[in-house]
Amino acid sequence: MASQFRHHHRVTYSDCTMGNHVYHARYLDILEAARGEFFRAAGVPLASLHEHELFFPVVESHLHHEATARYDDELIIEVVVTELDQQKIAFAYGISNTRNQIILSGLTRHICIGPDGKPKPMPAEFFNQLSLAFTGKPAAPAAPPARTPKSPSFPA
Image 1 (tube, rainbow, N blue to C red):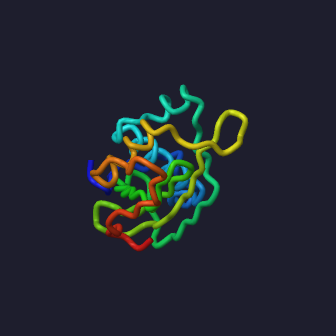
Image 2: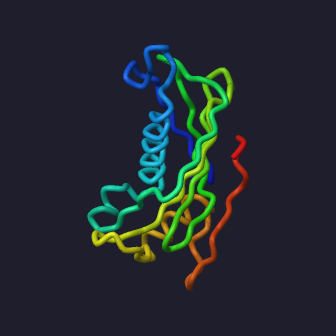
């Protein structure tokens, strides 16, 4: 898998307001779906992380709206890991439509926690799989620094 992951989403009626544009908060749901597919494509489905009592709540999010998406638009969501270490992961996103119009750019930061809600380090096996998925290289053996992949093709 390349450092940039793409996910497609068809705008549903339930995504839209009465004015036929995607409701602003629904973009967070769309990004979450893309993020879940990123983890699955990286070989680390979120369900397997949950089975190991690892959770990645969002601790920060930013969205910059450029244009509106409407019912039945096909959206392309680009996901790029911008930061990764054993306790946190950050993503940059770009959403465009099939007409190459930028709809939204965004960012989310997540921390790794256990069921008690306290931060905990990600086990090496998961960390290495995620590192390999976005850099093409396994993680360094001891206390790897945060990694920054290629810049996204969208404004972050």
